[in-house]
Picture 1 (tube, one colour):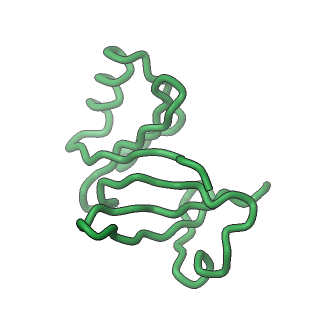
Picture 2: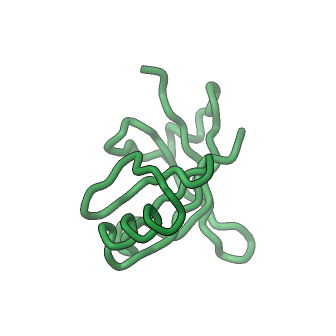
Picture 3: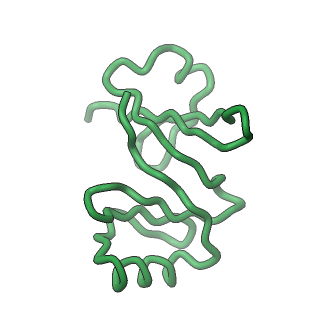
Length: 101
């Protein structure tokens, strides 16, 4: 397992993508009206709309994600599969798997 990304909630994806790109030199990996994924200094930052995803930290489960992923997981638009849990303080943690293509 390894760190994959952190996601923060924003009110306007396009505005936030522009801000992170201009201020921090972020490279846009993906963007639509409800979600943006940026590379900022070699780390991934997801910009999300609050009713689409919670703010969270995500970990890639790697090549052997375990059966819990397939019981609890949801398939996303990019083909990844993930599920969320809350840590003891209520923070959202996403476990994600990117199937080999």
